[in-house]
Image (cartoon, rainbow, N blue to C red; front, top):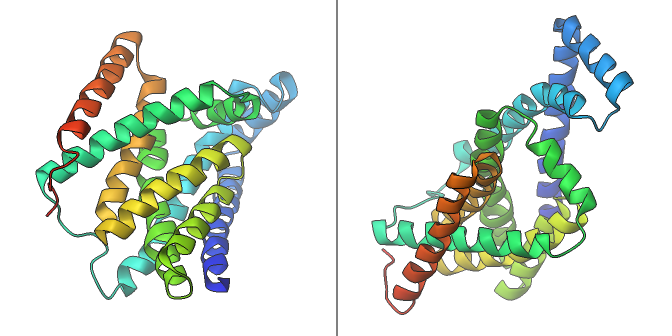
Length: 252
């Protein structure tokens, strides 16, 4: 358990160090940016869109840097392949599962008071769309799957039975999000991802599901009403595909 907590601390420290480094570098190399940050905070407050947008100019590169710091040691020191190839049918299945999970999570979140969560999402979506999709939609899921599924579940399974390992890893995954709403659905989402990983003994399926959920959420928020309608139509198609393959062996 101590080693699992150590991995969680490593996860946070990489982000903190990267953020401190990025903001310090930006402050000392771009005085105009620093003045705009100060003016935006003075005029609009620290919750203003302009202020948050300026901070995100340093935040997203910092998060991208932290993702690289986290991923690199595991890629260099791994003794076996983290991800193994899966069939086209399996890939489609897990993408559809991610689409449906994303829809379910969105419905649940919209049904509960989410003032702080809405504020958090406004912060997330203030950045450059390409950078937001790259960091939040792609790299964050990969990093989180490596830490919370590939490493923490494996570590805990050496101490506890698989069910306890799944619960504890999902709990830590929820804690890592540090937001009441996010922590709740991250815990539930972590159980789903953990079950997939334990069943497949392969990180690729859970990565596909996780990327689909995160990237889908970001794309939905940035999309027009027409594109949103198309995305929502994809939920129905995904349900059909999941039901079609429910009792079939589509895995490699």
